[in-house]
Image 1 (cartoon, helix red, strand yellow):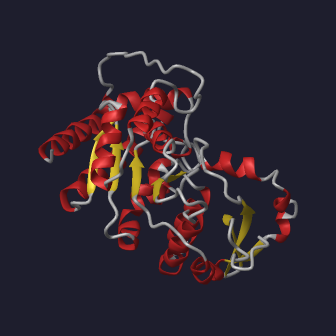
Image 2 (cartoon, helix red, strand yellow):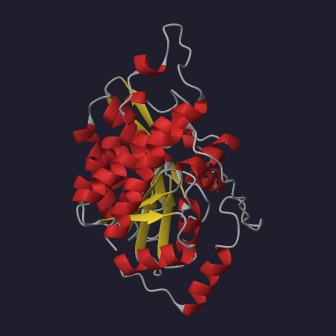
Length: 328
């Protein structure tokens, strides 16, 4: 920060969005030259809060209007690819494997990106928000050392419903669409449910739902949690199918492909070189749990009849699988 040629905002990222009347503010966090290696970005934020520069976070606020101008003050890496997913389908592990390469910056479910997208949608201010989102991605994708060459962004699962906006911002960037058998996703969600699996945590309208279709007049949910997640999965799988029919820069990837096969597909599309040493490290990482790196990954297969509430999701899965195979 004392380098005369260094921008005063270099090493800082916007982490939280606040709305005051019609004005948008953001809180900043100092990350310095940290590599983002945590499974999810909220863990990175927690790790950086202890840095001395973050001792006065309440003072580290600005209008979001400055993002576009400030982002021009330092060297940024343009996105190499976006990784979309339907949840519990290997995207976290793939992101961590890519993160083993020193040349890669990997951003995994960044809360500030979600803040901007959902605010823009809810308030009908997307035209204002999108340039700020692109600038914010620049802050996160700043070249913090000479090794950095590529930027991979793993989205939240519901961000597939911002496909049109993200594609407009990045028309030449590959989009990878990771998916899995719906019954397997449901079983994983039953163990620990994500935000998208809890009605109301994510705006129902984002999935194309109406509140009156989900809730009775007394506020009680018309469906159980598995039924609701099945409906969410239907929206994801249908969106994937629609995108693949028209977007030649979108690529479907099935969870049941080997992890290294998925990495090879991403590397081939993005022209990402991987050395033998890096490949060996990735293979070793693939044998362990994505969220618990010290635990060897095991997965029990539970073949069982598809329940009626999942039938539409399963039909969409097979339809998507046929489309993926036809494009190989």
